[in-house]
Structure formats: structure tokens, C-alpha cells
Length: 249
Ligand SMILES: NC(=O)c1ccc[n+]([C@@H]2O[C@H](COP(=O)([O-])OP(=O)(O)OC[C@H]3O[C@@H](n4cnc5c(N)ncnc54)[C@H](OP(=O)(O)O)[C@@H]3O)[C@@H](O)[C@H]2O)c1
Image (cartoon, rainbow, N blue to C red; front, side, top):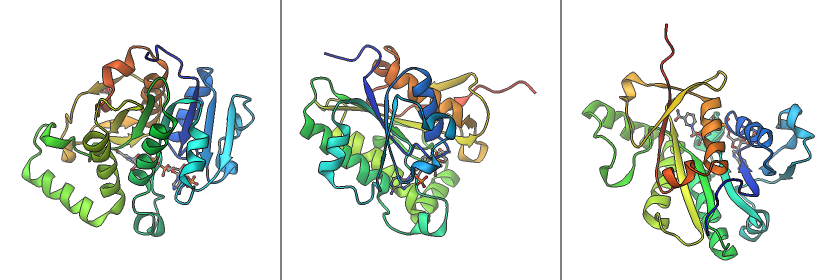
């Protein structure tokens, strides 16, 4: 059995963040009930906070026990994670350094324990700085490889995102019985309304000549993945790169 379109409830992580709040709006506009785990409900956009399809649970994912996460995931056909480390000294360098990878691992454990009839769809927000394993992406030039190495060495969040993607690709794999996944890789995030955008199998631009990706387009694509019958089979088990179509000058 597979989902064809609406997945029932969606569990949303990071719904108070820059991308997560747009995903929340996209899903609610599509009539999808959302269960959002947030640290502070006050940080949710006021215009959606009263939506009857939204259930808010206040919890810190760094300390939420596994069985509680499992309970919150029960009945959800999809999980969307827009989790990220806060952009502050403490957020970037303080614990938990494995916020994203650790949470992804616990989500997969929860799915396995729940044994749903249809695999849970897990959509993870990531970055073009994350590589697919086995050198599946176009080989970057020496300067770009040095930059990526430096960023991962110096910035724990960049390492965390790569570990989360590696975990899904190498440990969970594309044929796990209870969870399927897509790792969404936007380029440089910018503001703006939903516009035309493209999804690529792999990296298309140099880190030194980055493309732009509107946050709204990332949110739109993530919502398509969990609600559109064609998007999921096209991308499951993959790490699509999302970039805006160039806007004519
Ligand atoms: N160009 C790129 O490819 C690119 C650029 C930027 C980001 N990214 C990646 O995309 C992801 C999302 O980016 P963003 O800019 O939308 O993130 P963001 O605005 O920083 O939002 C992060 C979200 O994670 C939540 N969070 C952090 N720690 C948490 C915890 N312990 N428990 C529960 N929730 C927690 C935050 O909650 P609070 O509101 O409570 O803090 C917030 O909702 C990140 O993984 C980031 O690395 C990629």
C-alpha cells in the first residue's frame, strides 16, 4: 500500500523557523492537519496559531524522550523537519551538536517501533553543502572541496546536516519497510513569494556562484512531497536540489 495524496496528519518540526513557518502555512492552506512540536508556541505566526487543523505541542527535541516522540508521531503519515541550529554562538557551537542527525535517527526508530501499514514519509530540510554518498553528485572543484571541508570542520551544524543525510542514505536506505525519506537541498535561501523553481537530482552550481532558492519555494516543494501523488514516488530515497528559475532582469 502507498500514499496517493494526502498523508493524514503531518508532524512538523521547526515550525517556528524561517522555512518551517512557511511549510506550516502551505500545509494548512492545503487542508492538511498538522501536529507541530515547537519550543515556544508564542513564536508561531499569529495568523495560523488559531487554525483548528493545527495541534501544537511544546517540547525541546534535544531532551524529548523517544517514547514521547513515538506517541506524537503515531497517526502521522508524514514528518517534515525544518529543524536547524539557532544562528548564535550558543546555537552554532553549543549542544546538542547532533540536533538534526540525532532527531532524524530517533524519528526513524519511532517509525520502526510504530510499524505503520504504509511507510512514513520523512522530508528533511538540508543544504547544497551536503553531498550525496558515493560521490553521486558532480565532483566539486578543489577550491569548493576545501571550502566544504573547512565549513564542516569549523561549523558543527554543517557536519550535523551531512550526518543526517548520510544516516538516511547509508543506514536507513531507500527500501526500509516503515520509513521513506527525501532530503531537500536548497541553495542560498532568500525571501519572496512562491515562484517558478526547479528540482535537480544533484548539485548544479558551484559554491562560488551560488543559485538562489526562495524559502517559499522550499516550503512549497516540501508540501508537494507530502501531498502530491506524483512528487513522492519521483523523489523518495533521493536528495533533490531546489533552485529558483532565474528571474529575467
Ligand atoms: N542554503 C541552505 O542550503 C541553507 C541555508 C540555511 C539553512 N539551511 C538548513 O535548513 C534548516 C532550516 O533552516 P532555517 O533557516 O529555516 O532554520 P531556522 O529559522 O534557524 O529554524 C530552526 C528551527 O528549529 C527549531 N529548533 C532548534 N532547536 C530546537 C530544539 N532543540 N527543539 C525543538 N526545535 C528546535 C527552532 O525553534 P526556535 O524557534 O525555538 O528556535 C526553529 O523552529 C537548517 O538545518 C539549516 O542548516 C540550509
